Image 1 (tube, rainbow, N blue to C red):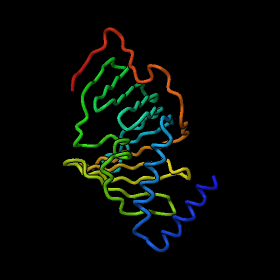
Image 2: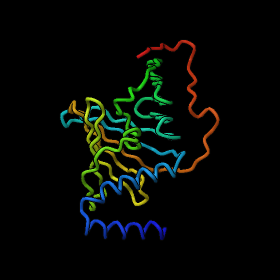
Image 3: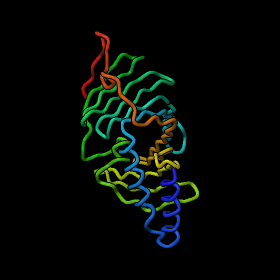
Image 4: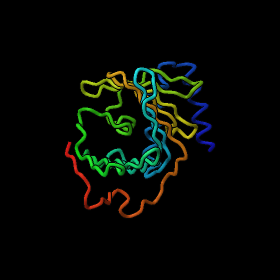
Length: 201
């Protein structure tokens, strides 16, 4: 705890004397904290806005092993499961009993945890001390992503606003982190009924 407080005081001093430096430094600190906290679980809410109007709101839990192995378990309003593993994904819609399978194009980093942990860090242009928010631009192929990342006192992301070139904005809220957890065997397996409809993307 003393180390976190000392780092915070140090960063406030940096902010005062080098206003262009803290954004990238805080971004690197957040990414280091994500790495150090693995594997972790947390609760999330996801909202999608089109032209400023919210069209979707969903919530559930996330299991994060690393940036190439993540599970989103949607619980409300409908049960769905999204599993990303080494660039391939499975998305199961329980209500419609459909499984969508495909691959994420590595040249288009659009999955939120890939953006947060990307080895291509993008440009952190601003640190807003009052709201503890990093503004980040990432070139994802033809699609430029603009992110506002609010980080908590422990340097884990609490809220991410992701704006894409298609005028769609997705807001993620993360809470109740459980870090350094032991993952159950089969945590990333996806049991399916025999009559599931499989759609290859």
